[in-house]
Length: 221
Image (cartoon, rainbow, N blue to C red; front, side, top):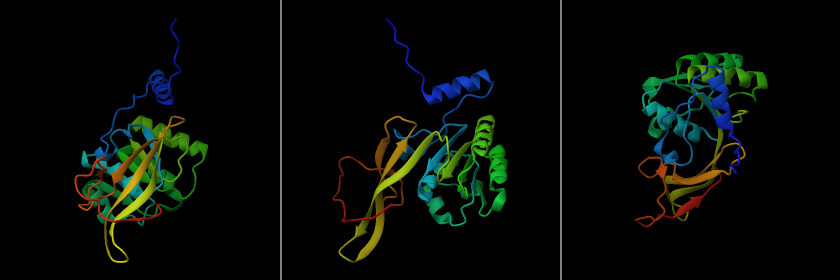
């Protein structure tokens, strides 16, 4: 006897898109550090709880040649974004869109591959539907710093540990974090990352370190 398996939310969305003549989701270049945790897809939105996570997610498609936009993040550090792998020459910044943040975001989605947004408030269901439709039509990606309803995945940073600090002296050289990716009701995926390491590279933490790990200073994310 064959038992029918209920389709996942992503599969249902793809079927609806096919029936309505919308392009199916396609994989988008994702930073190698997120391998096994998250694969970005066209037409999707992602919620993150830190600006550094948002920059790391944007760095994958940016390094692959995509034009990107950043809306409502005047505190964004350009040096940190470049260090994460964001190509600034292909990045459009709108630090303070004011009350027109939704219109600005929609306009950028029309012409850019990835838009990173810090919304001043939780969007309404109507706004989410409008942006979602625009993302699917254009094949773009939205990375929301903060809560964005009906996101494809929610990405969070946990258990931050700084490296390089001794007993009251020394310089912070690197940090390790646990990245948690939650998709719907599925069990969360977690991975330990250097964010960044002493060479300013974002990468996965090796299971067995080949060298002695310096003293760490634990902090809150």
